[in-house]
Length: 384
Image (cartoon, rainbow, N blue to C red; front, side, top):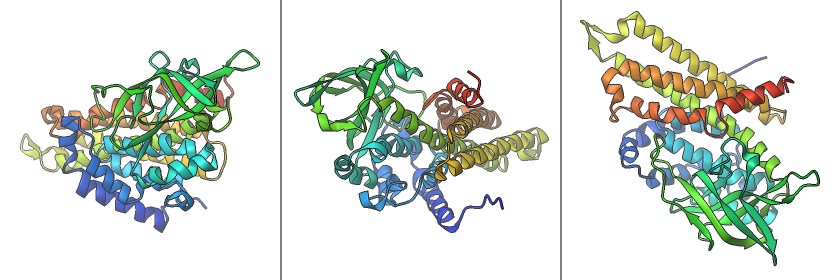
């Protein structure tokens, strides 16, 4: 039997995060966004709710839940604001999961309790200034010298990398050459404050302005040999696995933004009058909102399907790419239509839809562009 209803535990979590987002985040996040300020108090409250430990086992201080629970939380947060949602997504998916999935017992014991508690944030240093979607073009190097990795290179667009509570960045680096002549890429933990590790000033961004994003530089940065995450030379395969999971999470975030656009428009069209009627009475507006709801609903089904396969332990690369592509399209289209419905007010930062419009575009770029998703889907269909 097919049943798309959430069970009691999932529904309780969804409702709790929804209430938090509406009562605690929505009234204040616009100010943080305009000031381009990281919302430490909001993040601390999210941490106290256990959100950063949702898919991490109780053994390491987590909530013992699963990745779908994280996705539900991300959707509800993004219905109000994407900056806090991406802080959670990156903190868990990119900060904690590489260590949780591939780290040694010692690494898990050392780092995961703080990360799961949300009292510390981790980041994932993958993208490089000249690399973009071509992660295999990694130029950052790590050489093993006297029991230490000596790292040189740079990373760009790294979320959660420069906050006051950032404790580590897991970076991919070329550690040698494979027998076939290709690059041997490994993943290495670099704790914040390590000599030779520099965090550049924050970017001036179009959107996600209440989140933290920096370029990173490594100049003869030395960390212990045991900071290698997983097997040497498996860093590329590891991050591909992490990105598959992350795309489901980003899809959930995109669905939240798309649904948030519907929420805001329904409120607005019930109040705004034009030509003697509430604008919600006009079929042109009704059809726009109907299309917006359809996009959000369809995208939600896509990420639910991907998450279901992931939790069953089945291959889900194709479904993750589909969910990411569909949800990012839905978010961008809904943000554009919501801004149009709001008219001049949609162009003002005081209204959430203006923020949603600015935040939506990055969903078609981050954690794999829409073009990369189409490439992955085609490959999964046997097209080479």
